[in-house]
Length: 214
Image 1 (cartoon, rainbow, N blue to C red):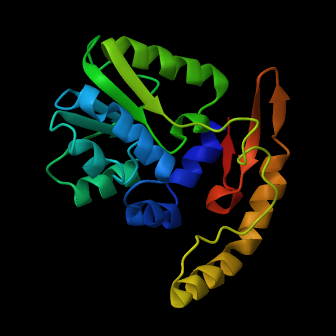
Image 2 (cartoon, rainbow, N blue to C red):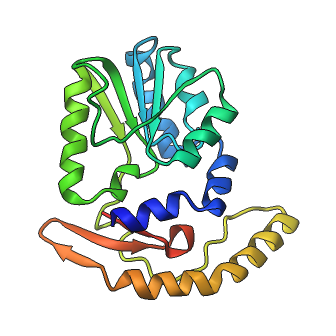
Image 3 (cartoon, rainbow, N blue to C red):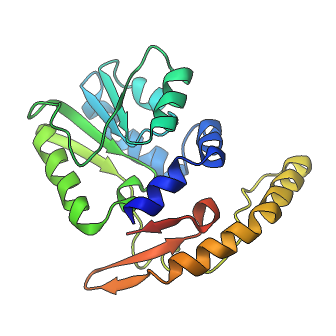
């Protein structure tokens, strides 16, 4: 799971894809943000798995005391290029030892990032987040669940929705070009699917079926 997901994050195509992302993933994410904004405004924030920086401008509206980390060097470099004045570090959510206990009021792990980590290491992330959070601090994260649409996805081509016909055509052509790789990944990684008591590890359709998610 670790090897597969790291390879997906650092591919050139995915780095470019993350670099284009801006704004909220959906209305639910924005609503969650609004629900905690007043409580954490002006307080220290840690942004885990920042990628190429989609969440960076959103969170810095709340506080200038902002730190981001990611474990993919290419994404860290892209984020620093886009936001050279931000504190963006290379690091792993499983080891936050560079930060003292009770440092942050808010820790964020958006875009289902915690689901790319195996169950044992997931517990390490939760333990580290608990340690660095201030008393009464908040951990804001998103995750898949077994009752949701992201569980056991069938093979599909990833075509981002748009009302622009030209963009839709380009995205469709790109998806068709990537179809053989997506099919290969789906066949290979679906063999690693497993059902356990209370959770599953499943191949996800995102990034040409290049991920295994919790």
